[in-house]
Length: 355
Image (cartoon, rainbow, N blue to C red; front, side, top):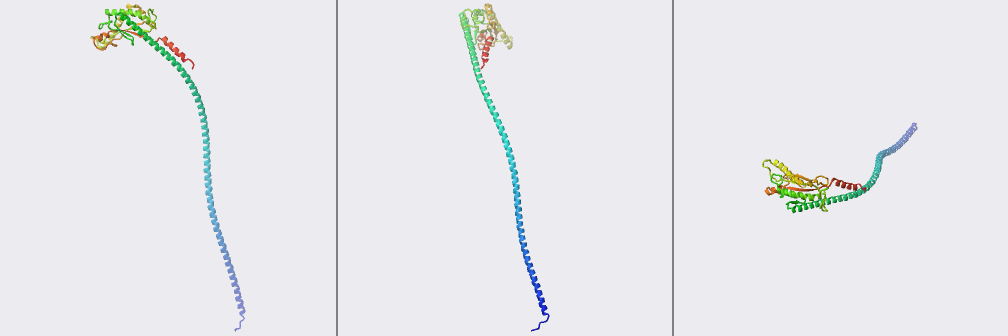
């Protein structure tokens, strides 16, 4: 065994120092590591907290954005709803105005309907009154027409009676004639003959005119106005407007004249023939000049028709002889102005009657 030197105690002391430092350093390191671990753990926890906070922030941000979007949508919806409400209010206002207008129109229509109903009743009453008035007028007119027709019929019957009496009287004297009852014409063709182109009366014609004058002077006063009436019948009345002595010619022209000149000459010749008979009647029976119609106008008259009214067709001598003739036309009088005035007054009296 080797003896220890004096330096051993120092060496042991030095190693012990380093051991203490080393332990201290190990302890410090351990503490450092422990602190580092704590720091790391704290950092980790802080990082996790930051991550959580970030996620929460992002989530909150998303939620905030969503809420803002929803808020904007709600605001837009609110604005839309407000617009809808305004439109609805406007529509309601218009509907109310329209309802009021329709109600006013309905009131006006009802008032108009009442007015039209009242007017219809008035018009119905007026129409009924007018119908009654028209019925009275119709009855008055029917009565007037019936009276006129009766008078016309009576006048025609009286004229027929006149022609019958003339025919009987002329036939009794052997005078040849033809009668047209409808026209009221007495034709004297054979017994009042005229030579071609002549208007003077032959002896045979003068005899016939003499008989005719006597018959007319006896019968015509019964049918004239204001004349003395002898031997008249119950139906005899002043029905005549005029008794025309009508002259006629045949259709032969004049050799020395043109066709137009021949027509004019036949007109003159027919008037001359009528005038010859007319003058002879007045000469033989002057009383015929005194006969008047209901208006005080002389009853006898004359006219000439030339060749325009032939009674026998054809161009034979027999037809020519028949057409060279004298007709007596008994014209019925029309109603006098006094009769018409009286009839109008009767109708006006009915018209003025209050319905």
